[in-house]
Length: 191
Image (cartoon, rainbow, N blue to C red; front, side, top):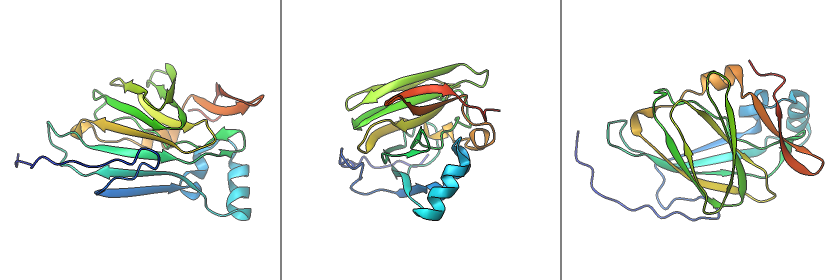
């Protein structure tokens, strides 16, 4: 393994902007329309309002080698598709035995997790929250507030990302607005 020189990346807490990102990924509604339960509402928004930004990731690129700790910020914009809040696509790790840590920087979000056997967990996150995603749990974050939800994450470089399982099966639960409050409901499209 080649020796990497130590470095520092500055993180702007309220925007998630990194001083020198190695990559930036933007996910718009068109990238995720089929992930929302109300696909008719997603199509209507795309046709009438355009292709809104759902979230952006800014990351530090490191080799996928043992011992490396890639890290990034994610900024999820506020909003809903029908009753369902803006969210990340979500993923399992390709190497299921790898965990991850999320640290809330600004705003409010919920961290939705599930195992392949169907067990679910939803954790509230605010600025200063450190959330642990254990091995074998898929994870997605949801902005349940009215401002950007920004968090910082760190994972083991060899973990990899399996988005395909979530794209195919979805998450067992959804986070929606019910009676003026965020609520967890069963996903009618799950599986």
